[in-house]
Structures are given as C-alpha cells and as structure tokens.
Length: 342
Image (cartoon, rainbow, N blue to C red; front, side, top):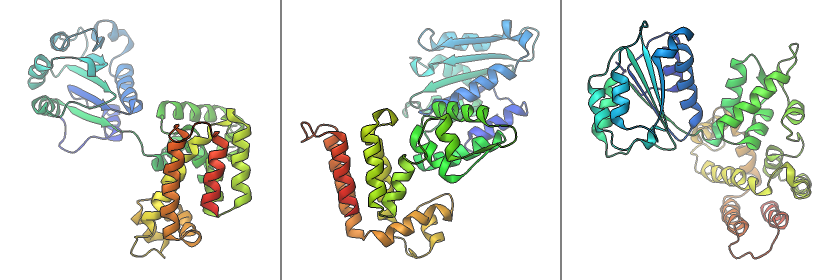
C-alpha cells in the first residue's frame, strides 16, 4: 500500500517505472499537467498493447456513478496480471459512498486512476480521503509559483539533453507563464529546433523559435527597472505599445509587483548586506537570484518601494476600468514607469 510520506510527482513516476503499483491513484489539483502525465504513463505502460482491449477502461465522471466505477474496479483481469480503470473528470462524480466502500477492500489486480482536475476533494469527506490513502496514492498537483518556473524549464531541458542560460529561462517563463502544458509544448518546439551539434538554448534561439524578442521582453524590462535605466525601460514600453501582437503591456504588472513585493521583504532580512542571507530570506533557488534584490536595495529606498507597490495597485485597478474611462494602456504604463524611476 501507499507510504505515509506525501507522494510527489517524481516519487510516483519512479515507482511506476519500477512497476511498483498500488490499487488506487487519486490525482487531484489545479495543475492538469502532472495529472495527465501520471495517468498517460499508466495508460501506456502498465499493460501490453494486446492486453488493453479487455483490461483497460476509460470512464468519464460526467457519465458514470460511483457505483459504476466500483463495479468496473471489481472486475478481474482477462489473461493479464492487471486491469486498469481510468476515470477522467472525477470531480464530477456525485455521491462517493459506493466507491469509498470499494476502496476499503480494493482488488490488488485493479489499478484505479481517478483524475480530479481544477480543485481537490471536499475537506469534509474525511472518510473518503482516509479510504484513498489507505488503498493507494492521493496526489495533489499544485500550480507552480512563477519564481519556480525557470527551474522547471532548466530541469525539463536538461532531462532532454539540452542546456539553457538563466536569462533565456527567465524570458521563456515571463512570456509563457505557469500554464505547464503550453510551456512544455514550447520547450519541445525548442528541443526539435536545436541542432545536434549545439544543444544550448540562448536568447536568440528563444526569439527565433518562440517569437519573444531577446531585447524587448519582461526580463529586460525588469532588468532596466532594477538598474534604474530610464531609457531602456521606456524603450521597451514603447515597443510593446506599438507592437500589441508581441504581448500585453499589462502582463508586466504581476512581474513588477512580484519584484517590488519581494524587495520590500528583503529590507526586513536581518543580514540584508549578505547575498546568501537575502537569497535564503526570500527562499530563492540560489544566491545568484538575489543579485537583483541587492541592486534594488541600493537603488530604491524602503519608503519608495512602498509607494511603488501602491502605485502598481493603482495602475492595475485603472487597467481594469476603475476610475479610468479611456486612458490607453501605453499611457498607463508610461505613467507607472515614470513613477518608479523618478
């Protein structure tokens, strides 16, 4: 049965590849990428192709009841060691009592995979959760935080035999965002485009394959703001205002807010003159990532940072039409950048 420790994507995949199966995999959460990866691996690797016709069943929560799922799980495999039952849209299954009853005594020959997306099990269903964890694996697939995306990008490319510099990883992260399915699709496109003789992703490769300018992007705007480079910051804002197909200027707001929010926190670090200490205080992946905050504390006083955070909130509200009947996006962003840099 499942171990007591909280299962992770990597631990689940490791056991699956070792063919260490459990009777139940309940996969839930807001990030569909990991749920799909686990379910797809089980669907494609547990049974041999010739075994699947009679031993692999895919159900949809909108079409079946908990009783029907339990009945399917109670069947014995035909000329196979296992049968696989995959339930998609498991969040739509209404009453779970019959399934809960099955989970208390699951068949060892059945691998039941429940795919519950866009949320988690109702916290009041304690007995249901207990039955799942005693029978197998309960995994929550959480959205990655924006600050973790560059690490995800680096790790994904490394596992596929390619490398990437931190700037390029940040450019991709800022451009694509936390939709992992879309992000992985773009990374796969990069991997296909890389020549066999040079498996390195550079800003130029990103520009050529994904269409994100190596000179005009969120990473470069952030760098200009950190270093109080007035000309470069305004140049980037002007570029996006004149080239709306390159992306929304408003997409910069979360990035700027996140930076100055962390910068405000950095001021409370007991050893804010130490790059290592600031990195640990902000829970950054490496001391290198703290460089921008060290620079920011030199260029922006604490009181100014508080005022900038307030201004970003004001511009965000105006961008959504609050107290702003007709000011265009470019003008709002120029107002914000002027306020930040002066």
